Image 1 (cartoon, one colour):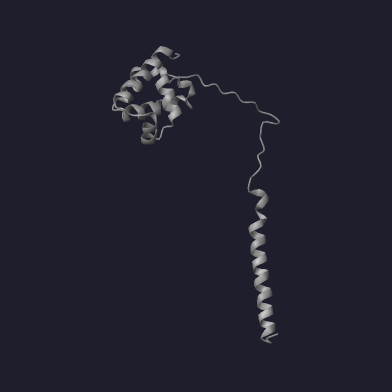
Image 2 (tube, rainbow, N blue to C red; image 1 turned 90 degrees about the horizontal axis):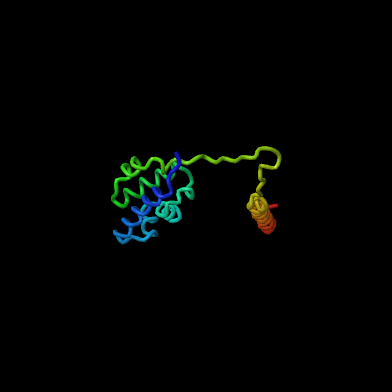
Length: 137
């Protein structure tokens, strides 16, 4: 069963209206719920396809509605079709599908070691000169 876009938009408008009634901005809701603003907008606009997955849509809806003082469980129970989405997994296996990425720090791994070797070398040379000047050698 596919969600009706009208059902999704109606549910989103309930959230948006409640948020506006509470005089809250999306940024304030984002800061309070830790749900990204783009996901909050997607919920309010009824664009669930912009969410990561149906599981996240379900969780975000529950958390957001509870934050707004609405019964998230009831909204989800009354609209279960909204959170069902066909998984569109498209994978291409074979040669060339693995992307090799360079490690940005790999080229400078020798620098700290060179600094330590240089510091110990200078320390050794300084100790040799001090011992030589004190006629210990």
